[in-house]
Length: 205
Image (cartoon, rainbow, N blue to C red; front, top):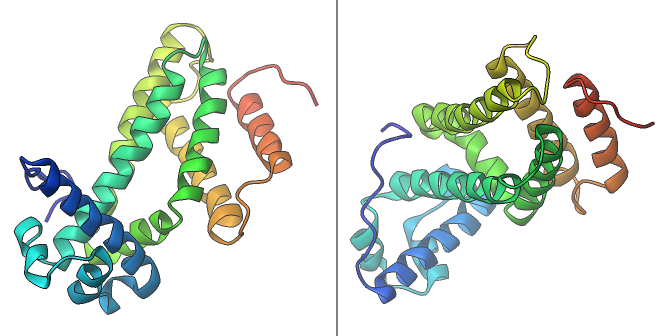
């Protein structure tokens, strides 16, 4: 299986789409609680409120629903960030809003960290796809900011993108995954001062 393979076709009816989403929502809960190895299709269908056989109308096996869940959450995250940064006047402002949305999204979907982490062992191609797909879009945004003269161009945009991704990943892990109240505002401000200075912006404090 590869992370960028074509996902199963969406159902044609509203009812079918709702059932499929209920299965994904239940799977997110079950994988978070039990991990991939211990999770079962029967527990997913029980929580989704559908018959056991209904699961197989939408997904061929447990691994496929796991992969679709990672892809779906990844798409949701990238879409949420893209929506808020598209109208920002410069890259530094876009970074600030993007990090805010990232932390809010993973706070809402705390299982996402576990899913992505487990995917390294469940489906290594999917694990690599998640970071490469995120990194590709991030790199393009930084390249455009360099071309517009918004940030210095003395660092390879891809290197900068992965450095920023690493900051988000580990701060989120420390304060969202291991905490219970999300990223404190004071922590966010410290993180953003560090990011802004590293990207060549003038910041107070």
